[in-house]
Length: 148
Image 1 (cartoon, one colour):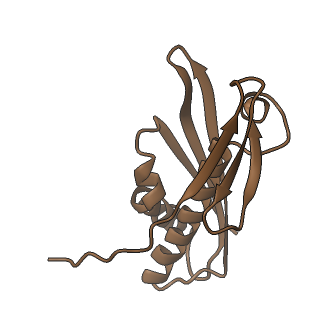
Image 2: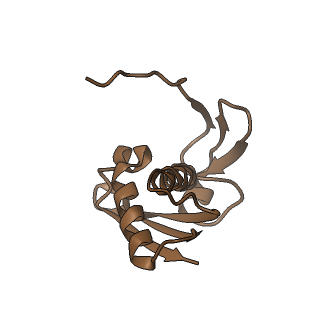
């Protein structure tokens, strides 16, 4: 029987003032390393600030990259470097704004692996990454892996 370990809980906060279209907000991370504005314009058109979807993309890219490093290392291939871009697709559907897809693109320098082995390990990692599992309700999470 495996033993559970508890990691520290993480949090972020959001403050909003005003109506949905004219209002504005501020998102801040509990660690204090990021705080930034968001608004209707930043989320649905173009504006200065972040969006919840951008923060989801950052979380997914970070988690997936770390999980890939762990997976490669466990198989005896510690990576020299990995770089992941996560793109979150937000679409206006009949039911309202919906995240319909996430596209992960990872490239890596890893000695002793073939492209096929890198693809297999990253595909396995995508299924095990905690953020991927948390986002399991997203209809499509795609992966493109490139060994440099």
